[in-house]
Image 1 (cartoon, rainbow, N blue to C red):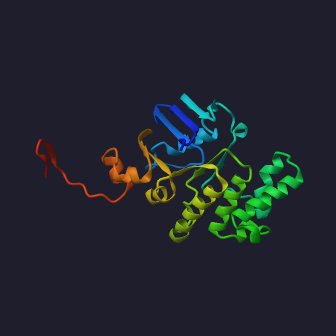
Image 2: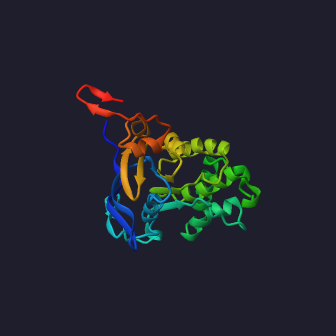
Image 3: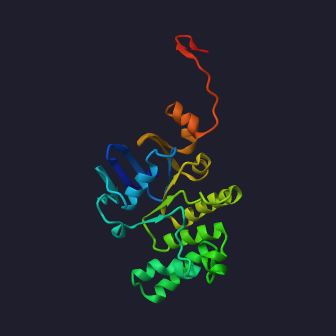
Length: 255
């Protein structure tokens, strides 16, 4: 069986804000149809990296290769990439259907194609019954699905999600984690999610990258990161661990 194809290659990317280095020489390969998580504490550089992938920030150094082409300095509207914001950013005066179709209308696609694609994504996200409602008439989970449908309907090569479940309560958050994973599998689009929630990454991600102070500490499957953390910080951050001080000797570890 052939190895999954690399869709996105982040090559030695750095970003400085004055004297502050937000992203420090990070290199990552993200595969086609992969659910990839950028995980780390606040201020680790994960959101800055996501904004560079979206085109809202330009790297000081390095390349961002999508399908082999460098998009590091390509404007956001010229990239086959969509970003789903944490706040969802729905138009309050528009219905669910109008919110979802807005991006396609801006592309001036034929009305028949717009209707067909919107109907299909509303069905996939189980929003058909809410198509004529306004955002204020929806629950938090329904709004989240509308924002996701609006992003997916444009069929991007890459979907970026900036802590999309942060506004949901714990029970709904758990349900939507599984829902996001199901949808990603159904639509076959590469998802890159930014989160500081370890459980979220462990549940949803095929692979995850752990960042700290702008640097990449480890990139692997959730199971590998949990069972074989690269250092003490990763071990402490990724889950509940017991640390026993000791000294390595020829006879083993002496506590």
